[in-house]
Image (cartoon, rainbow, N blue to C red; front, side, top):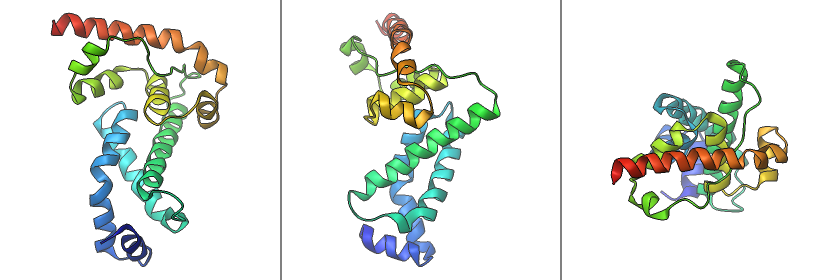
Length: 179
């Protein structure tokens, strides 16, 4: 079944089509959510919430771009909303923001497995992890990140140095372990 057919069947409430859509995207979207989550349980919660939003908003897909990109955006936005909810729930102070890490040794990064790279992301503080994903992986600008997270652009930029140092320290530690 092609996307237009699956979408139409899902809109009609066809459970088999909904399951097919879930099966087609569950693993990819779990990976997306895992990059934003502190642990597997949090990622699974994000995926569940993401699929609820996906099915509730399926009628809003206008076929003006790739369906998978539209789905991905729903899950990224779900992860951001989840982060905001947890931040408010835990009464966390204003988050410090980081951007993509540059000038790292590409040799060590290439030697790491996907699981080890995911572990590096998981070890970052929540705010760093969210912004890293938005900036480096999803391609958002500082202005877009600021708007999404309700912070100032300058906050994102001012935390860049701290984030780089934190990341470089972790990479150096990994180099020692691996070499």
